[in-house]
Structure formats: C-alpha cells, structure tokens
Length: 212
Image (cartoon, rainbow, N blue to C red; front, side, top):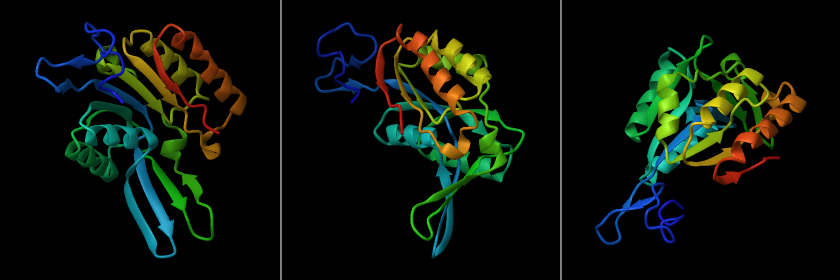
C-alpha cells in the first residue's frame, strides 16, 4: 500500500504526497534492483518462454498498479534482451541495464513429474549489476527501493549495493528470494545479507523477507 503509509499523519511528508485535488494521490517512484531474465516453463505439453525474474515481476506488478517504476538489472546484448526491453516498455517500466558478457539470463522451470525443478544458465549464475552514476541517481531519487533476487553471496556486489543504499532517502524492502541452485556460498550469503543491517538500521524499512 503506497497512498496512505504516512500522509495520514504527516501532511508535509515528502515520501508519499497527496495532490490538492480531493481523493487524488501522486504515485510514488520505486526502483527495483535484482534478477531480470527469461523464464522457460516446461511441462508435458511443451515449453513457453516469457520475461521474468523476481525483480522484473515486482517492477511490472507495480507498474500495472500505476506506480512509477525503474528496474535495475543485468541482461545481454541479444534477441532475448530485446524481448525483455519491449515487454518492459509496454508496461512503462524504465530499465537501467548492465550488459552481461554471457548474454541474457535464462531460468528453466521443469514442471514435469511433480514439483518444479530449476536450472539456470551461466548468465544467471554469474550475474552482476554495475552501479554507475545513472543507477545511483535513480536510487537517490526514489521514494522506495525494493531488492529482489540479488546475489548476496557475491561480496563485491553486496559492497556496491550497501554503498548505493547509503544515499537512498526512501523506504527499503528486501526479498532475497533464495534459490539453492544459485547460492554458491551459503555462509557468505547469510553473512552479507546481515551486513546490510548496518545500512538498514539507519533507514526506514518497509519489509525484510528472509525467505526459506
């Protein structure tokens, strides 16, 4: 819920603003950071490939609700990246993309014979986001920063994320969305996730979901 989080008590709140017109709410801006990829869904009938990734799904869902959304993630310089760009453009999501050397990520969800089994290509396994000046500016300007599907076992990425969040002025929410197939160092994953607590304790936090 975005329209009534603090304006009901603080008329001068800059994070969520009501327009002068009755019953009109100025939509907040949100930046989502994390996984952007192609989901390949496989079942007995065949397979279908669609844009996905936890961060992309959050961004598109918010855009459908009328929220101003920017998405920060990694894609390739390939046809699948074009599919993702067009999909995000159709939903009004602004993409700030790092171009990965292994191409666009692909997650295969094999739903045959019971519970889904997941497989990830090299691009997903080695994913990394470049926090350049443009990304840092988007984070500074956002009313809320949402992180989903981030590689918390990659120390360099966590350090860059922590530094970027120091300039964030809005609410923070984290959904690690852990996938065992993508966690190469579980102790480091947990330790680095906890390290962000030093940043989060200084910030208003909307939600932290530890996952499973």
